[in-house]
Image 1 (tube, rainbow, N blue to C red):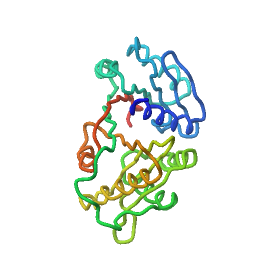
Image 2 (tube, rainbow, N blue to C red):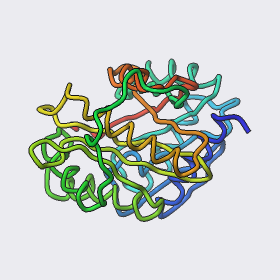
Image 3 (cartoon, one colour):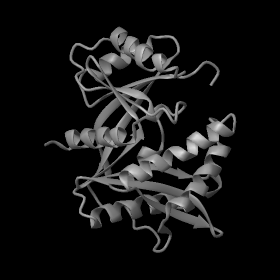
Length: 259
């Protein structure tokens, strides 16, 4: 089985474990979690058979499934398919829709330089949740306390359903950088890498990603990967850490009006 097929199975498996409901549609399946209606990554459609899929059909499926559940956003994705760029071009012409181009990067080499020993450590879920909550409150997405709850508690679902491990780096005794590691079937994903602005450019993200990758390898993973925004700078850091791009997938998103 190819690396991209293994990764697609892995990501779909994580989403299925975290879902409260699965809804098939012509060409794919929707993953839904009724406890987190504002979380786009927990309520979306994935196209499993993209051949012949049209933009109009996919938009209609999001309206029927997500709109039918009263959800305010619309989200769909197509992974590692030659039809992906075609669908992406179509969605770019639609008013209100955005297209995110994500790259899957596999660990294939050693870092350009070793992290400073002792910079990163494995921490428990509760410790990293405190860091995550502060990040949510600093960010632009939470408009009320229920938003904060959903944006923070969603990590608990993935932790409980997938046995995530957590890595962090501190500055002046408090966590200012962190990431998660998910492992399933000898595949490891490093996810949700974040560093507070005041702690950036100090090698902390480098350290936590390196610690997670080392833990995955020590745990027997023969495929270690992460996903990055192709239009953002972190991909350059990941290349320096030994990751190389092996695949591209697209996410199509229509956010609620006004937010």
